[in-house]
Image (cartoon, rainbow, N blue to C red; front, top):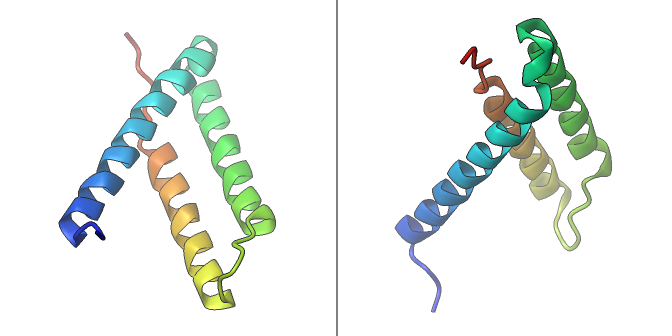
Length: 91
């Protein structure tokens, strides 16, 4: 049985939240000690490297070019949205 649209949306949202929270903790722990400017520099570097990797290394087998371009664009947008949502916690 194929899951309905609302169930797929719930699954996607749950994955996005879970990954965002895991990454938030990892990035905060790794880069917090260098101060806010260093933190922002690390976030920007990670974002640029991830987007570049998506565009140059992602190969989707069995898909047409349009689908591959769309997936790469959405993945890149997700990376940017996710990483720009991280803020430097001064606590």
